[in-house]
Length: 486
Image (tube, rainbow, N blue to C red; front, side, top):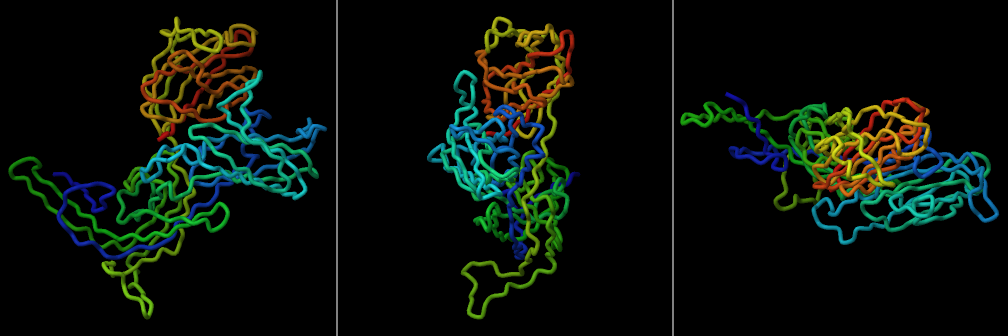
């Protein structure tokens, strides 16, 4: 004999069950999304006074991001460019509006671009800052610098608006031109409208979001309204339902017996909201959700109060209403989890021709198979032999081949244990052409962003030393974070 728990919430699971009346109690409340403030000082270890070493933001989505920083030096040349004493900050981010080919309701986007608005505010109204936005996927010039798509000199405050392409990595650069000493600044980044993110709200019988089971009520939140800069709110109303527990004896036999029992009336519940794919018990890595459980007293629900001249709408449910006084604030993100872990096995050295792989030695690559997929971080470990004092990609070249299970954004972070060494991790496609990857020299090396990888394609990941102490063998760890691209 085994118990089988079924639910009458059709958007969680579809099942055959005896017809049972719904509990006509309704639950009402509010969901809020606050902007995430990202402090420059917390990102300082990634800054390297160049685009490659800029502070990396998460993929821009429906949660507004506001950068808070300080320009600690101002200098302008006769040509109007930032002078040698100007403070520079670089921030790297992925395309706003979720890079989706379709809206949350499944309707296709008519255009792969969306107008993106960046709002820049300086704490001193007389201060002047140069602000540039660059496409870091398009390099130009002898130094292969990112292509600047928009630049403006901002006095006090201002906005910059342009069409952001889908599936592109960008950077924003701010430098002090004129100002009285240290001047704080904020940059409000563009974000996806919450209505496109399909925010779901569920009521559960536990206050543990990681073990909440299936809901006893659920709905979509919206429409959202921006009640103050960077803060969005929406109301919700959902009908409480009764679950049915079915016990099956002698399953599949002629004397199979099904016994059903309606759960007792629910007296209390806890509210969670987020961009869940559904309201089931799983909490996928990378999901934004309300980290604090909001309690609702179901037993204390009161009859609907209509105004003196109000009549219920035809077909409307008439019954008690449980009002949730506390707002469900979407403020947490489900952590990524470690997936596969790979240790290098020699021989695994593939040669290079210029900036591409030497395909005549490609059979030396270790086959890592298919990565774990969105929501996971796969880890590659090994040691890199520095064979000479040369500064070039001529040292140990540990190489893995890999594929992805679905269209995915991959984010690379490479770290090693020798401060005197510079180790890179370029990624190549099946033709041996350099796709991208961490290769800036900063430690830890993240090289500024996410890159799109497609299923069915074989890619090659190479960890190789650029410079270091001859005869040394720095140990490294390469983390590959995977996020769904569709």
